[in-house]
Length: 492
Image (cartoon, rainbow, N blue to C red; front, side, top):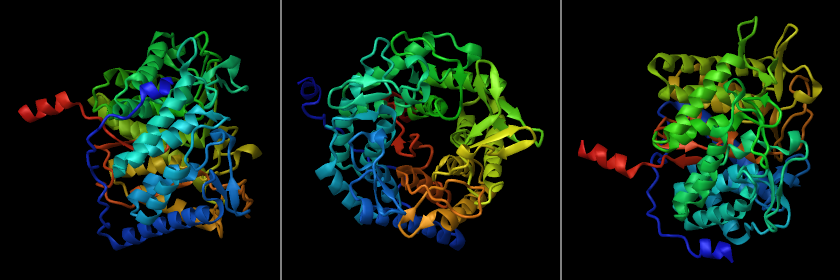
């Protein structure tokens, strides 16, 4: 019953028409043509999903059938929800409407299976929130809040640090069996903040915001080794697990969400800003290194020892450093922009040094090797967006034409090596001369990779960064303007 009492009906909210979704054609003919090509890629990915896997989570483009990842339990339609806002901003109105009707009819969260709280939050909650903020369609707000309520039992732990896995029917949670000492993962519990602040905003119920603010309280009480945040935190004891630190998988989006929490609050959440800049300072001191060949990279820290490896996921950090330059002390603003550019260059090298011109899952800097994957199980590319995401921020913040050049190289590589008759597939080895396909068209290819590419070849007034903050799945959320602040501005 409690859910019903909590959300018998949603309060009326005034829908503010979104800023920067007009989507004018770029003036330059070549750029126009490139952007049209990226929209055609979205069409190819979407139409094949619709033809062979409609209503299932993802498409297997070689087998031409549906693919269901255990990350989503029995929830269906991941590609539909993840792609909504991309369809919207590309002006694919018919497809957006088809997606909406599917969601209205079939999107069901009452599933008796475990889901990843993190994945369901960033893809499903994030995708629904964005779709609502872009279109104003009430169904998306309703579904987002309904799903948010379903995720609340994950926080029923002694510390309030949520479980990684949750059975949405029984409300029983647990952690990944492989995680150090029964710990929750920093990047997972640290990547709920933006979505949950918006859930409180749209439901009128502070419970979501309270849950994520409590996570911050727990983190602030803990001693940080060398100012760093370990990837593992035990939800029962509220203490750190193993002292492993990473700006790649297991850590990555926690740092991103500190910066974005500050930006999304219209720069009023100064606690988030301080946590972000303190963390970045520790990362620069302990994790960022330069190779003998002059490439700046971010290593992994294991109890004080560095592993000189950088994951594809870590490549998002170039964009993050550049985006954060805005809030840095004046003396450091240029430094962060340059650091972003250096990471972008390193990640571009990781692409450029492969046969396919697409980057491996992880690359190393040791024993004379630079920006190259040395282990077979790190040579795959699964249509990931992080390098292109960094190009997008670097393009927006510097307008250096090389970022468009690099983005176009990625488009050509995707077309040459990942495009198949039935959609787009990931690759098992980017160094090998012939394609070995993994047969999965990841939902984030439509949500992120193609969206960021499209934005790079659009004018800056399409989803301008002054008005929108992208969640870690590239779903744009509007900045929550502080009414008091707006009144002061008007009075001035």
